[in-house]
Image 1 (cartoon, rainbow, N blue to C red):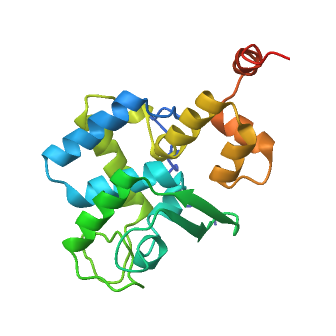
Image 2: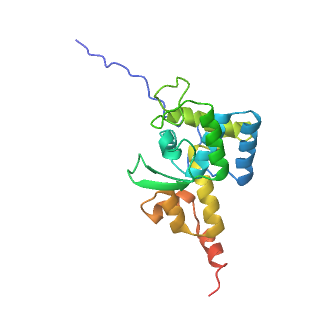
Image 3: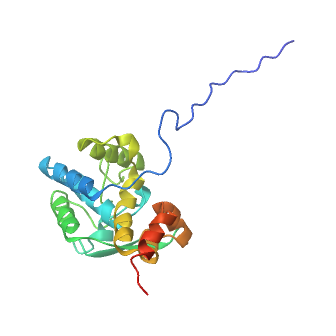
Length: 208
């Protein structure tokens, strides 16, 4: 009696047809273009989410898990917050700029939320936070809104944006490491994509 092996469908790689690799940060002009577009379209939640994601420099999985009490423990947005990262379990602090605080306050005015509620919920609302998949789709829409190719950017583009600007302006790698919540400075170097030429350019600005 012959036994036939049951054929299984070939699993399609998750990255088939997609551009992989490190996604670049947004440029400052891109940030303002997205902000302006969201404001004009009265996308109150998306504006609060985008601004907070830029300021916090958090991974997408941590952005969507933010609760009201993390950023507005007194009913209005505070200027500094701290959360524990899901990936590492390490706490990380971040600043909340004035325009981001205003965007959060405007968003909270449209919702009746308890301090323990997730700040950003999905379409179903309730006690479920926005999923990372939903966040990925939102980022793609924001990118497309200003005429950029969504396949070239991702959620880590949002996380890298302010960190990269801070590094380019100050050259303070240790500060950026703390802001990103990295345990090793080597991780920050790889994450920012710092090359030898970048380091030399900073060194040339220092006279001893």
